[in-house]
Length: 323
Ligand code: RIB
Image 1 (spheres, rainbow, N blue to C red):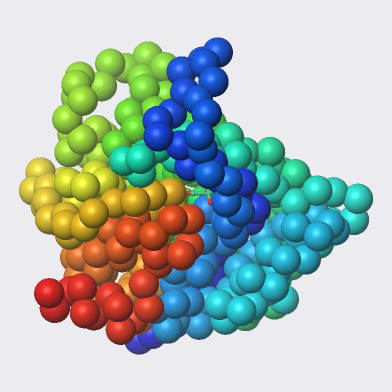
Image 2: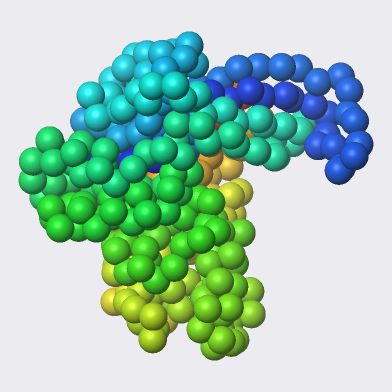
């Protein structure tokens, strides 16, 4: 069975400054180079899925400004369906200020603009126009209001889609979200934030230390607050690959090896991973196979400057997988 990828999330314009190193608070670093790129976690994920040949739709919100107009055109050039993208009058399009150092590490701050006004009604209306979601994968990230992300997951589940929650950023998420996700895809930092929040809310010490496999397992197990993640937690580990913890075999974590590249810019690597994962699952691939492909897609995305520029086509991904 193969289906569509539907991404619900943010769309930004990225204003990027590449410098020798990242400044400390209060410090000025000179000698940087300025670049502008298309961005936003949700929109990047949609582009990653579309480049891999999956029919892909994006549900999000833009301002009625020049940035918004250009961001919509950029998505359309990539073949992403934008009939489900709302332009909000009088609002600014989201902007991300990004600093990237010579090793490709980044710091990101976002002015949400229209992304912060994406509401549940817009998502309901957009998903309603897509009909049954059986066979489709709905990928939701968190640079949009929490209530909207929750509603997207709830509706997607109700319509039969497989749901992926990319908890980025991870702050403010609880069991009411985790229990609606078939797959959860935190990076190492996001996993720690989620585990610490569980401890704060429940008062229960998780006792898992910083072991990602144990932390992931705790997000799968039900708690007094509700059910956990339904199918699996996939922890992205950057240049170390990924870790898969399945709900049906929580005591047997699986390490998925990294794909070695020379990283120029890690911005968007997680988005490439999530988009490629959704695309492979929507194409009917097994979970492990989909993660292997997503790890390679994430690595390739770091080889060019900008969040989207390095995201691979199917041919590029196949070549890298064969190498
Ligand atoms: O994940 C990278 C993205 O995060 C950037 O494109 C930026 O817009 C922020 O949303």
